[in-house]
Length: 410
Image (cartoon, rainbow, N blue to C red):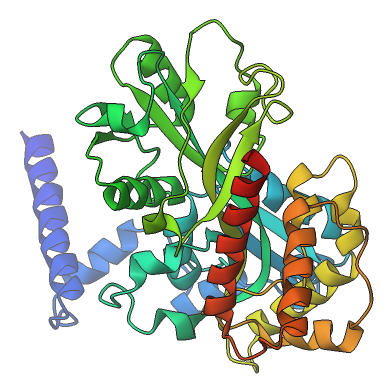
């Protein structure tokens, strides 16, 4: 009986102490209650809060570990790219492979959703310095409702290469018009391909039923006859199609360079050399393309992130010839650092570098489009047309490409 009474007594003391601790946590006075001393005697001894915090801090702020951590972060810069189906991830890796140096600049490629989402990520995600987008992406934000003043918040470092529109369809689909009312994969939500597909079909007055999935899933869905076609906008040759073998009866649909597409797109083509397994020798498939652009957040000049962008830009431009060598992506052969993006502001140090290093000739230009662009610029200067703004000149150049392609067919 005595043991039971003692147990109840101790239990009462503990319950009372628990009530007191709760009261203490609520900020109410408890120093006059004698049960506090009993409770404190039951708890293991703890050093004061200040002492515990001091013990948790590194004692040597100049330790080798801390110095390594600071070095690892001070020269690191990141670039948001795309998914493995397109060319963005490979291009981002090329930046890392060429520019990374021991104890120097380090480029971190980040897997992304694609051009449209990349703009948001450059603007809003902590730690994202740069991104890849397409020349038609800004029209997605043109109304200014989602991101007011967008064109003052981002700058471009370089216009890169063209990205061709691939529309891969089942055997019974012979033209874009045949996709009316059919289920078509517009790729991942938030990707540049999704926006381009929406824009193109709307401009052409064709209304397919949009579905969204990766390209490999899309091709499997075509095999199960669940969708009629899948759309991908990527620099050719795209790995997802290069790895396909004939046998399904699927094929690329031609996309005519209609007047409704002239403002945002360039005429382009897919060839046997691009996809020898899918396009017969001597045949081509007409399509359209946009330009890939390397963008960055428009940091103030006195910030650390701005200084990192300057370091990246200088090293990118100084080592540009290395990007044209194997095993880098074949699309680097199309890139001209002098090319501009109408309607966008260029990163000031990029402009300065080009001015300071002009007129040095770049390595041999292997892009047919770039040779035509140079010839076109020379023609305009000899004809006295020096007053056209960038957007007007670009529209004339697109018309010139289309005229030339039509002339070669005649």
